[in-house]
Structure formats: C-alpha cells, structure tokens
Length: 363
Image (cartoon, rainbow, N blue to C red; front, side, top):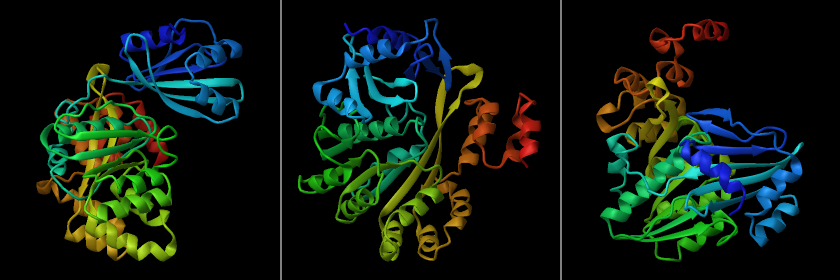
C-alpha cells in the first residue's frame, strides 16, 4: 500500500474536503473550510517526494521531473477517490488531494434551487456553473449529469481535468475523457465531441478563448453545453466571456450570449450553524429578453436589478440567497457576512460582533 494512503485515510475518516502535503509543515486537512494540521512531524523534502512518486504513473513522473505540475485522479487501495495536484515550490514538493465521493450526490441532496433541475430539461444552449476554486462546481455538474443519465436517453460527452466523479451509464451513454490522457486540450475535446453525435457536452473548464469559442459553437449548433468559469457573479461571467474573445468577435459573442446562454449559476460554500459542515448557496441568473437586451447594449451592470426582481422565474442574487438561508437557519450568519456584497444588510445578523469594526474600517 502506498504510504500516502495513510494520510488520505485519515482525511476520509475525518470527512475533510482536502488533504494538503507540503515540505516543512505537518500534513493538513481542510475541515469545513479551515486548514487544520494533524499531529505529525514536519515533512522533509526527500520524504514527501518519495511519498508522491509512489503514486505517479510513468508518464506523470516524467512530466513532473520535467518541471510541470501534474493533475490526475487517484484511487486508494480501499477505494477512496481523490483529485490530485502535485507541484513544486520554493521549499520543495507540494500536493493537494481533493476528496471525491464514490456516490454521486443528487441535486436535491445538495440543497440547490429547484430551477437547477428544470434547467436540465433543455435540449440546447449553454448553462454555466461558476465560482472560485473549491466551491463545489464539479459536484453540481456531476449531479446534473447524473439527473440526465437517470431520466433521458442521450449521448453525454464529459471533458474533464482530471476525471473526478465516475458516471456509470444508466439510460444515457456517458463518455468521460481526461485532459492529457485522452485529449490535448479542452478546445480539441469540444471539436472532437461535435463529431461524436453528442446531445450533451460538459466542458470541465472554459479557460481560454479557443475553448470558449468552440463551446459557443457547440451550443449554437443544437447541443446542450455545460461548463465552468472561475467567476464570482453572473455579471462577471458575461463580461469574462465577452472580454475573452478578440475584439472583432465582440458583437458575435454578445449575440450568442443573448440567444444561447440559458443560465449562470454562481456558488459559494458557506458553513452551517455550529460548524456542522458546509452547504452551497447560489446566485442564479436566467436569460430573458430584458437581460438579453442589456447584454446587447453593453449595460451588463444593470443585470443584478433584473435578477433581483426575477424571483418568480427562479432567479436570485447571492445576497438574497444568503439572507434566505440565514432566516431558515441553514447557514452560519457570520460566515454569510463574509460572502455578502451589501455588508450592511447582514450586520444585524452577525453573532461575532468583533467582525463589525473590521468591516467598518473597510467602508
């Protein structure tokens, strides 16, 4: 058994989201959003490098020795699954292991808004799930794919870096392809997928102009495209899409967004009361005529007001969602305060009043 499995088993037992290994510090676990060191000695460079090389394939080992970071999936001998990033830094080797549940969660179990399930009924267009790293985007997309897999008869092609949740074909054929293993880039993966009779294409990360352009083409030509961006609101997502492509494609991109973008779901993970884990809280923007016009006329800054008044169609701003979750006692109000935009709306809910002077100094 690889020696690193002992740390991963401890992490799994503690129900942590990530295991961090770095030279000069003990192994650390991310528990409910906080990084906590375990009782163990500081890891030496040679020691940690030997742990890591035990689980690298020949190809990954060659890439790592050549100076590249490596991303891959790893399954322990006990069957626990992890997404892994191994890298080098000033003090030596580092590695982060993200725990991937063996059971794919349902949209209901993730406490996501009902509109997310309804969005899966669409047959073409683009749905974006956004948020910063570690906010559960991959989990939400996996739950959406599992719903499609359980309820419709489709050909689903999933492009990932690396493969995280493993989908067994139910009513659908689910083809999972991994960046670096099965395809050289997301853009090439989307280009190839369009020749493979797809109904749904999942793009693990729309990280460059070529990938965004190819994903837009797929959505415009009759496919349902699910994708992610590292943006923290609907407005920032739309602006990022427009700015990512060359200036001469700006009008074409705005036209695509107004006609083929179905929704933007932006997530954060917020602590539950009494530190009983974390739950997803979402901002949801659903495309309608008013928002489409704002995009076409370069008035994206007015989109939040449309989202705020669109609750009857399933839309909600992040602050609205956070306030509703506080009132339902689903999240910790102090943590919600940290994620809110309009701090004054949340100040009266804060329990730890020491947070407020810090907030006041930022005003």
